[in-house]
Image 1 (spheres, one colour):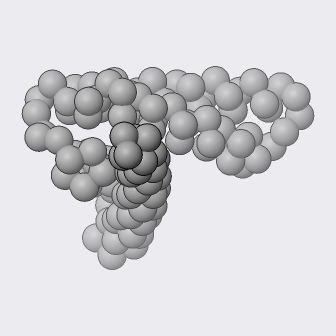
Image 2 (tube, helix red, strand yellow):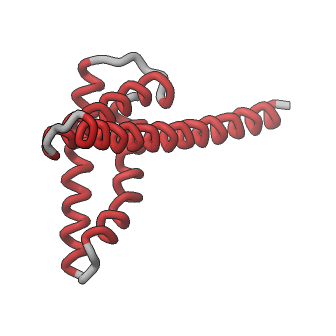
Image 3 (tube, one colour):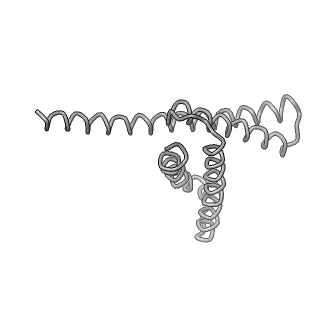
Amino acid sequence: MTYNVKMISDLVGIFRNHVVLIIYCIVGLASALIDVVGLKLFSEYVGLSDVYAVTIAYIMGMLFNYTAHSVLTFKTKMSRNCFVKYLIVVALNYFLALLIVILLKTFGLTLILSKILSLPVIFLSGFILSKRWIYK
């Protein structure tokens, strides 16, 4: 009997981890959509310069991302400490992406392909650091 309870508990734990990963992906896609739609809105309809449009849209996506991960993905209370950790991970992932792109370009890959190839690394880094450090 105890073995069955342990097995069921293990299965629930595995399922719960997959749900968190799926929600993490959905929130990431929604954040990217907010960023892109915001960029289009601010650049084409409001008439802001590219720098302002990109900056405001990026901040909107980032704030949505932090809030949605806090509330939906990891179900933690939002705090200044978590937000500072989130910003550190954003900066770390930015520099990691930059490093990967520069490295891959030295091997003759294009900028776009290099950026695309950096995305899985950034995704995994962001997920692991979010789960084990920011929202723990």
